[in-house]
Image 1 (cartoon, rainbow, N blue to C red):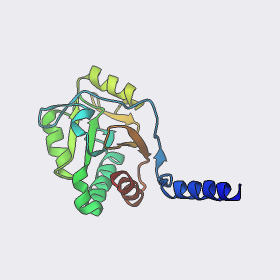
Image 2 (image 1 turned 180 degrees about the vertical axis):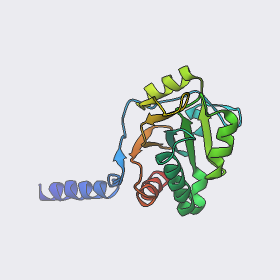
Image 3 (image 1 turned 120 degrees about the vertical axis):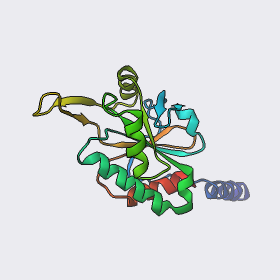
Image 4 (image 1 turned 120 degrees about the horizontal axis):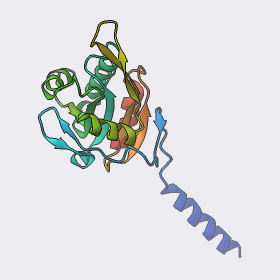
Length: 192
């Protein structure tokens, strides 16, 4: 009986050695969430895109607009810093900037704005209806806010970024203004 118990204990200990420790993300873990499954938009080069186009890469998706005065350029600059800190691993990451202002953010404007932060970044846009559908699927809120001048406006919008693993599954929510360190930490976990 003692030998059987010792054998069982040895087996359990050996089995435990093979288990991976649970992943400890520094950003909000969304693993298993049932939203943010897919999109159908056009990139700033005119190519139709879906999540499947980026299978095999970790994807960071941010919703914003080019005329945003603060959080959008700050977030894009942080993503640029993340890519620099990742070094060679940055080739396994795709940053997507999805406009919530397709009325003003033309393909040409996105082609000038988005790659200015990093040549590998892609700007995505759709019609007003496509943008609304993607916003709903990704639980992104946005609305037009009238400006002081006639015809001028800004956009209130969800300012967080989503991260997807190499299989296209949503994994993380990154709050704006955290700096690159926590994002780099989490991306390295997803890339390993």
